Image 1 (cartoon, rainbow, N blue to C red):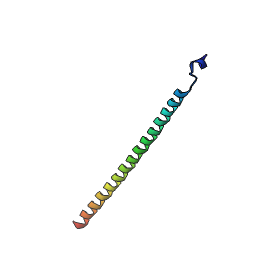
Image 2 (cartoon, helix red, strand yellow):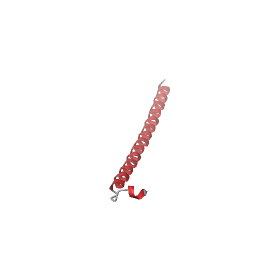
Image 3 (cartoon, rainbow, N blue to C red):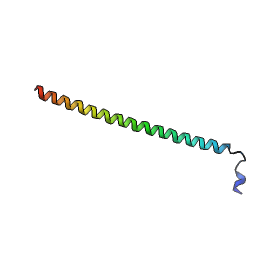
Image 4 (cartoon, rainbow, N blue to C red):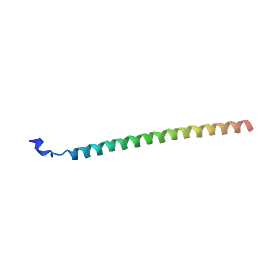
Length: 63
């Protein structure tokens, strides 16, 4: 009985699966971008810490 409810052409299934795979690809792309930004932020923090350290050392040497 259930099979009779499914239309003969399956185009709606193809659209649904295409939409779903597009959503997954978008999600993966966004996740990758977020992790990339996180890495950049970490590197930025490390650079900032290094500059602060150098600044403190230079002040200590010149004092």
